[in-house]
Amino acid sequence: MHPSPEDHVEITNLLARYCLTLDVDDVEGWVQLFTPDAQYVVFGRTWDGPDGLRKMMRGAPRGLHLGGPPVIDVVGPDEARTTQNLLFVEAQSGILRRSVYTDELRRTTEGWRIFKRRCQFIVADGLSDRPEA
Image 1: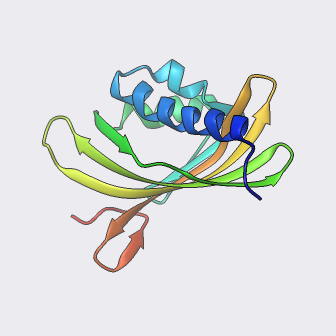
Image 2 (image 1 turned 45 degrees about the vertical axis):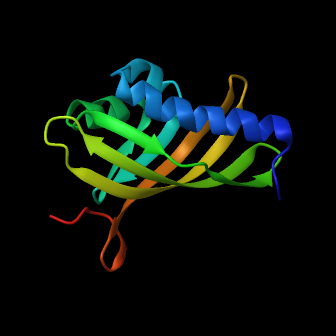
């Protein structure tokens, strides 16, 4: 089901904030974009809740996150799924990583939030849990 215009704007802004908070190193602002019971799956690992998200970010490289427009599917009154491509430019090395995010979102009293995010990397053979070396 397609999102309402209001939900489309709010979800698109949520995912834009995801990229921008990371780019300006606002980890606490970034954590607030997730539900308290959120799960993040990347590099074959799972990070749970605010503490897990903070721990993941302590070890993550800094850089520029260029997110494409999301495909949004509403699956219930308070649930949506999104798919979005992303180009990450690592600040130190300039290495480019191409990836696809698949998300489960929940509507909360604070608005739409990320409940589960999976990051897969675009490699020669398709999608992978790890980028090419």
